Image 1 (cartoon, one colour):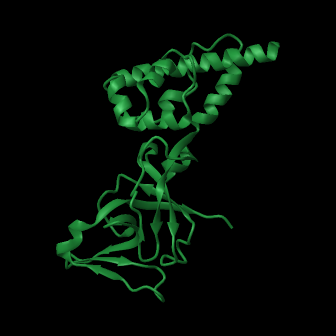
Image 2 (spheres, helix red, strand yellow):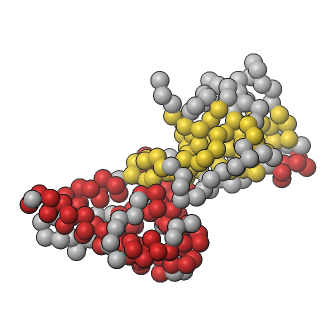
Image 3 (tube, one colour):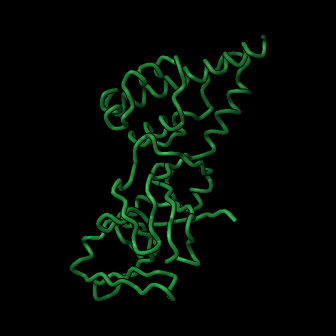
Length: 241
């Protein structure tokens, strides 16, 4: 009974702390109605979280943090002085663990590493997107901002051996144009593709597949380069063995 009471006290203290921070952030971000519209979250949920009546999910917190252009750590870091007596260690460990990670949305679309998969739903940036945890220090080493990175799954074989079918790709969403040569995610018509991109001095852009035996480079004329919609640059990939 004592153990259960302490746990309840810790949970209530954490809910109050996050609720207070959430309320202040939402006020800075234009108010409840504005944040509800940006995130798709019910305004009634926001009011309930403000009071500490319940804890928002990590997905909801990530959606609010992105909508308000802050890192989720601003909401869940463990340095609040108002922890209930006796709960500092347990709550601190919980929040420190959460704060060590950035929660990256996995987009509800597949990037074709072949000739282009039709994806009529395009890309889902909403609050229901699943999240993948990456350590903040890992993202910092890559030069990535936690709130500006997304994950996507590759399909196809045109980027083998570099990128294989089923690989998880980490996308830098700040790279919305072709800044320099690299591997990019692009939307071409209804197709979302991953290709190595190379600019040429004549103004053309080459979309190159690493699997040269099966796929030839596609040359985009200088006049058509503006039609390329760059979703981001691939900065990391991972796969199961």
